[in-house]
Amino acid sequence: MYDLVSFVGRGKIRKDVLKALDKPMTPTDLANKLKNHRPTISRTIIELEKKKLVKCITPNEKMGRYYEITNVGIKVLGLVE
Image 1 (spheres, rainbow, N blue to C red):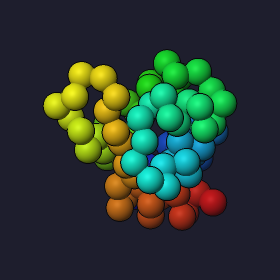
Image 2: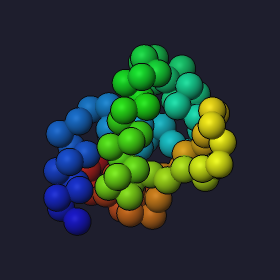
Image 3: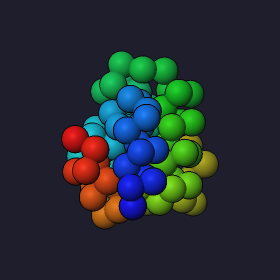
Image 4: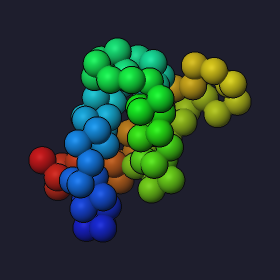
């Protein structure tokens, strides 16, 4: 678990994305909310998804996929803050 805490803690954008996912959002929604570039947010989501910290809830969509934080992501975020 603490390897995930370290992973999130080392990246400000990773932490910001997890915090911002208080409801399901698209990468574009997150980019607008966090005032960051969409490609940066998309790369971060891919990293977080590989670690099972976020999950796609609309995997069959080509564009406009929605993501949400997982229970593991919530626990890790609680330990990072």
